[in-house]
Length: 186
Image 1 (tube, one colour):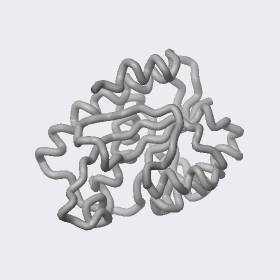
Image 2 (cartoon, rainbow, N blue to C red):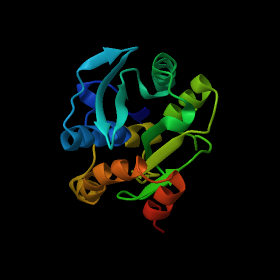
Image 3 (tube, rainbow, N blue to C red):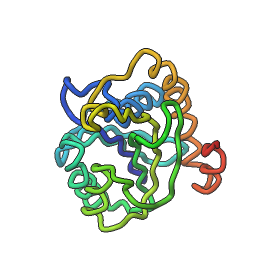
Image 4 (tube, rainbow, N blue to C red):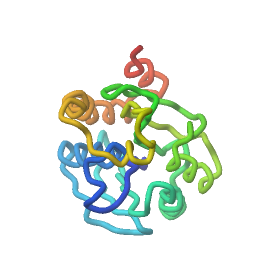
């Protein structure tokens, strides 16, 4: 069993904001793999499906970003999912819009959602997909990440969103090292 978590903030006012790219990816995966987010547990909304004979739980924490680790912790304890079977999908200010980077482990890089996950699950050794949202140094970081994507940014993100179902299928069938080699393009 795998747990795939998309990070974001709950509520209509945060839909389609840069910080909610994790939720946007999960919505794309729900369309592609034909599941829905109809179950609620531990302040998270989730859907389940099987892909390549592997049970997958897709989770959107319904606590704000900086408290999302509590939800992830409760899910991994309840479903008995080891850290190596967790994949976190989140925004990254240091990557250009339309770029992705896979990491097998590492620091939070200042991302509050990842900091909280690390604090709550007690390790930095979990897999992640970073999706670039760029950075605008002329705006306060909080205002920037909570801002909506521009039309141009959406055009750059669409190919990434379209590629996610294929990436997830590969995640379930090849090693993460092979997956990083395939997707971590310079």
